[in-house]
Image (cartoon, rainbow, N blue to C red; front, side):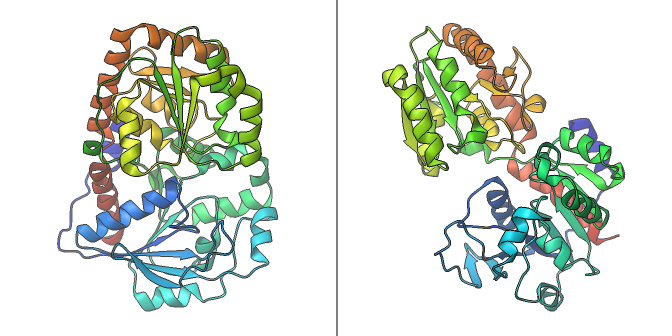
Length: 392
């Protein structure tokens, strides 16, 4: 993948004199918290820091319906404009083509702001790509949730048709993994339009501290797609003395109650539910854990893998998202099949009983993240792509 990134960006020069006015368009934004939302937030801060004008255009949709989000505000100096959507369009997104219908004239506001680049996020939502279909401004789309296009049955029919049309209407398409590149190529997208630039993290924030050698860590939402039951099934069969820390919000209460009734009594004191953590608390948890385990069934990328690896942790992950591009068996972790608790238990037990292997994998992970997944380095690559688009 690194070779491909170098080839695709070859010949791009930095136009330091150019101040770009960039619109980052996403259907959801803070206080909604997810990988795509945090990516957009970090990207906006990066652009502003480097002298460009970045604005976030989003909807007023929020999971807590009672929340009254302002139409215009600033979040840490970033201008945010939220467009109200028609109530019935919430149902439209569920049953037809995943598109909200704004009450406001989005195209008119974009023209008034004089943006010279539109950067769309969240590939399965078509609100802003459709609203701005005829705008003659360079467009780039970042595919944060591409796995949904392929793996979920509801993308067939009208959704898949409109999705392909939107891809054709973009000047460039940004994907996070080589796997996503191949997916788009398989859908018939011109490979010259596709750029692979992975996300990154602030590597220097992450560290390791004194470790006891027996703590497993899972970070993520407590929801069925994370398949935490696979990890708990594995834990039931691990003979070594260990404890599992689960860090993250409970998204599905019924699922959490089911996990609790089915596994927690059997595991007794082997599981600690830490709940949602602050950034500093999460850094400390990563630093104290010994093995990171990721049993998810579906992921776009899996940023928590980068965070764990930056904390010098070996990783045991299912084959989802970017796992196969990040992890090489026996070098920095293990990849196991989805739902395969037996193999997961074997790999975890091996790492619990082999201190040298665990430390070697952790060191290899830290080196990899420093080399290829620093957030500033990868945003610089995206900025170079912006400049290539704007000077065409």
